Length: 208
Ligand SMILES: [Zn+2]
Image (cartoon, rainbow, N blue to C red; front, side):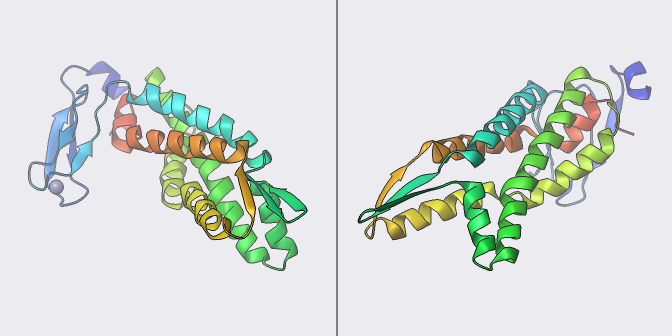
């Protein structure tokens, strides 16, 4: 409420996360704020950032479901052929007695990235509507935590590396799943580029 009443003159007092230099700027500033001492970004560019995060996070989330269910590759060795899905490969790890590895892959490549996209979406919608939705701060904390641990892109690189290794031994063809996974990783990267805790807190009227 405080921010809404003083939108024109309200200032944001904060410190650079990298060097601790005090930074002051107008709360309604849409410009990117750079630390004058070390050059780190204090606040990202505000224009359309909430809109981009909303659009790309929900698109990535919706593509995630078919990306998990569609085959990523088709492998043929002599007369045998098999196709692998992400969920199928996690299940195979579990069945091979590598349950801990399977669980790690499930967490870092599926659950955490999906959680990151959902929490980002919620926080961005709150910023877009310029009001603090219920559980705004817990959602933002969760998004920040998930941001450190989502590794769907690492998983994708792992698949690509194994393809390079296997390509001489068998006949490999890419399937829909890998393209979907690439789109998910691209959209997640775009979400991360525009996602900014400080900016969204200011926009949602939660800076105090
Ligand atoms: Zn600095």
